[in-house]
Length: 210
Image 1 (cartoon, helix red, strand yellow):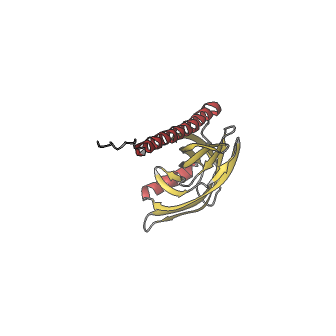
Image 2 (cartoon, helix red, strand yellow):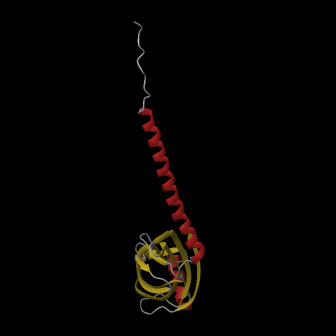
């Protein structure tokens, strides 16, 4: 009696792997579609609403301390600057984040520094903030003499620098964070605590870092 051959059946173990690959491929495609849709919505919003950078101006200033130490040639300054922040955008809010910095300097030498508060600014909104700044910095006798002369003339040049990270928000959609840098060149008639400074002129320059 001859040998009967044992029937062989196809191994279905490999078919499962192919099915997993198909599912994984579909998941990746779906994820890419979601990412593309979100990116497309952000680009559409940027083109539609054309977001503008916020603008800032210094409207007032008061000096509470301005003490020169002749022993170590340092100057301690404490002042409050009133800053006006305007959001010119329609339908786009501005979120002010952590990490802002404000600096007031005289002839390239820092006098004091502070920071902006963190808050959300609504559409077409103007917010007025009082920014407290203080600091002790080296202030040589040459700078002291120049400042005294500026005080006598009633023309004290000051530079105010503002750097703040902001996030633009359209409804619940964040359009990304940028850093706004502002330089304000002020001329005041005095920086003495005995007299309220009067802002005689101000020019502004700003740029945005993406």
